[in-house]
Image 1: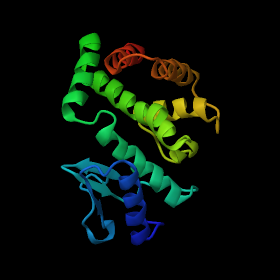
Image 2: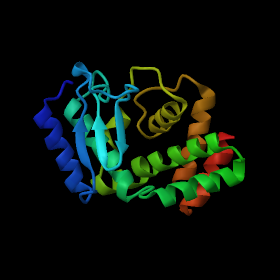
Image 3: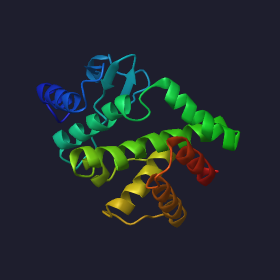
Image 4: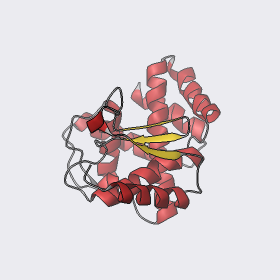
Length: 195
């Protein structure tokens, strides 16, 4: 990892205090000594433990600034959106009621929660857009990551979209996220767009 252990802990603690001390602890995975993630994920948060692997920070960015915003994002889910499992399930169920498909309902809910935090909460809380929205990912992206990146390009045009269809979908998604509507309504509209 490009950032020293003490700096990672200091950065996590800064984000943790800024976001009202949610009930989590940081655990940094030691991938060199065989105590990494079984699935080699870069990040996970389970049972109050935030696990961080070395693949979280993309190349070519300020690693400390990226980590700070990464931690702010992940910790904001604890107390802002969806903030508990009941709310997350309720949002996913609302999307499922529209689609009848749990996979798309999950995608709509995950997309909504990330954008709610990144577009509506963090910029208001800190007075700037999250740093990771300004960083291009240099690896193959999942559909969720592609959609998020396309929305970020609309907010902070650091690159042009390479896919016109995804760009148009991202425009619709951004418009929905900026509406003054209840969360359940937004998730249902996103589900319709993704369908």
